[in-house]
Length: 422
Image 1: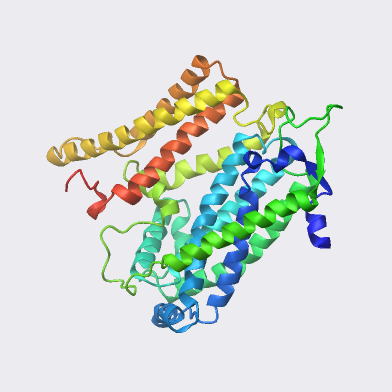
Image 2 (image 1 turned 180 degrees about the vertical axis):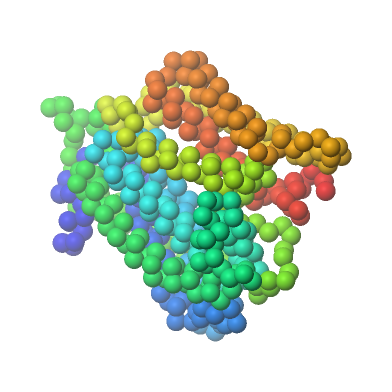
């Protein structure tokens, strides 16, 4: 109890207790990390990180250990849900301006946590050593060929023969030791920074008392009770999912038999879809690098701190964001289908250069489209620079989500669209 009291301040703003202020996303992420640590520790009693034993040890866990299948399913669903919850948590911080001012360092720490979680999921993806995992990791590792010094980094994980025992044991070490250690350090620092910032970001325009100061309430029981309820409900949901659905396990990995299609894990599917429309150097290196630099640099740009805690800063910005979602939901599939048509056109007329579907031309066209959208929305809705930036972010995030869904649900053999034909 003394530890909990030090994690939280003695009192918190009444506004912070409202569900729509945070949607309890940060707390749920912590609960999921705890479930992953517990279920992962239990699985270590059975798992053996060797290609000849890894798959059978997973089968043994599911079939011979009491509640073994449930434990593995809890680990699987917790990991996937953590990626989704953490992504939504970062969006909540972004759209409420929680990355500005004294919270700017915590935003960067949050990006490090997100990167570690994605890396943890990726390294853990290979450990069952089944066909789906083996070839998904193979696809991702081949992407290193298009990153500067990527080939050198690739040789650290794989041998000339491809994914091997060396890869499996390195991934196992990273997944069970290195990443958890770093994650604990970053999480502790993250919560300490939240504590130093006097809690989560809330609107200065709401929850004020008669003296123009935020109405404060005691953490116990007001906040602690809410956190306990959320933790119990989330744990129950994970347990029900684990009981009803089995974590997927394909046939044992076979380096000589590639599935068709071979897809990356769902959280990298958006980038795999980009690979179909851009040159790999753009899809794998340039675009992610630009996104990462923007995310790192955002807290140091001039922002409207007065609107901290306000979703989308203003009503007109909310309207602009809704419009951006509709535009992106319409435009993104149209561009994907157009590119498919261009590829088919080139197949029938091979003498035509492929500049429309790969290389610099489509990248420049997309950048121009983003700029037209940005300044067009800014002028139409009379947005400030910060509001226009958020609107453009909504446009791009929606597009990336749609690309991810297209890759997961609509791509079949040869990564062709199911309804497009071979």
